[in-house]
Length: 273
Image 1 (spheres, helix red, strand yellow):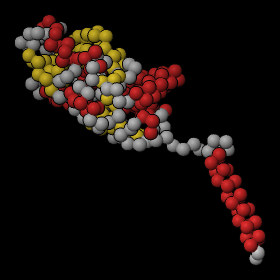
Image 2: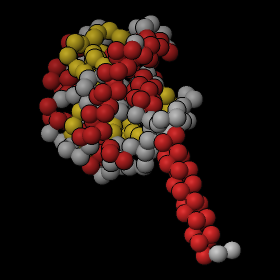
Image 3: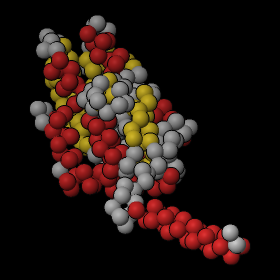
Image 4: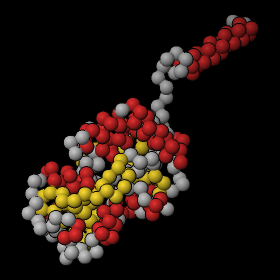
């Protein structure tokens, strides 16, 4: 074979290869093929392709063990973020952490997770250390007592032992409005509920939906008062570090509201309340 023949064949092969590569490159968009899966690189994620959230569990109905989303956990917060993650083409992962370090911003600043989702009320004090998403849930505080208790209102708490979760707005409300009560600060509802069942505390003052779950689970306990504190929950982000992710979560949350998917998730947990 002549040198010229080798050259012609080489040029033809190169041209064919270039056309083939060009076809492959355009097939994902122009030819209707699947687009590459997002890794969320623009969001500065702890793990590429995964939205990692930190939450204090259990705190039903917002977060508790179970579900079929692959994280091992479910609840209103978890299901809502699972839907948000899908909007962003991301997987969901959940880490169980203490609430006090989460609400103070310590856990988020350490880079343990991308955001906090733990029925966390948006407050000016927390905003000093945390960036919040748009509000996703409006809540009340409430007072849960044994059904045969002589406690009928917050005015009856003088000398009583009232369980509160450390670092929460429930603790703040009890401190301000029940000065005669002895407050027992516990890490989470996972300790508060057994404490009132054991008679260690006389009442629990905390978020209304959580106390409603206890009231529904055991008729020997009842909510005697609710307090409209004007609280709204938000997803929490490390201060000044996750702007792109915060904007994306807000955008996805609004899309879920507009489509009605938010209402579907909400009703699955709160319509009976």
